[in-house]
Image (cartoon, rainbow, N blue to C red):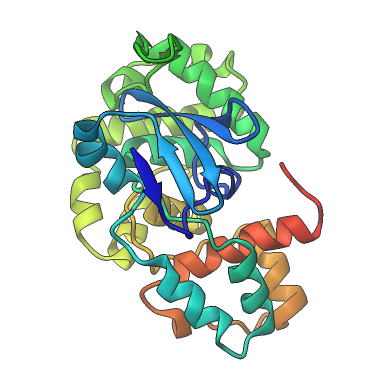
Length: 275
């Protein structure tokens, strides 16, 4: 499927810190594992992306996954036409970022693992978990052998010592606790997705090992509450250096999470960081 959209850049999305199983195959081509599938995407031109999948899979899975019904151009134009000079530059620089509609459970576990780790280390931990507890599959189109993200039931039954061997550190017990909470129905991710961002954060923070930052990341990237505004070390740096801690995310009600992604992506570029 060929998608023409000037606000759809796969490299920017892959480097935006919101997903961990989207990796380069060549300079312009990326492989993605999500929802038990593997696909490849290519940035054919600045405003053209080729998604290598059938029309049926595109309509059932990938159109929604890449949030292609949402007009990000409206947000970019609004920010670039505003008076905030940092956001003007950030929105222009990261204008191809979209907030993915990821699997909520995968996002929950991924961001528990993400605490105090850089992106390559997070990806490595997730791949080890998928190899140990996911299902091995082979993509017919590319011949790629890949592993699906494990179910909550599979991870709920994992042994602490086995996860510890995968270099999760102190996060191993949090992964098991969260998986058990979801498997037992104590945390209903579908219900949280349908509800408000505030309620989602409140419920997620009841899970051992989930604080405000991780709860906000899960709300934004896993439940698609785009009014969430996670504050990690990079966004904290933006707020301190450019706003003297006086930034009001409430001004951007309804799309503060998109603003956060532009900030995160741009500040890392300014400081030359790719991890």
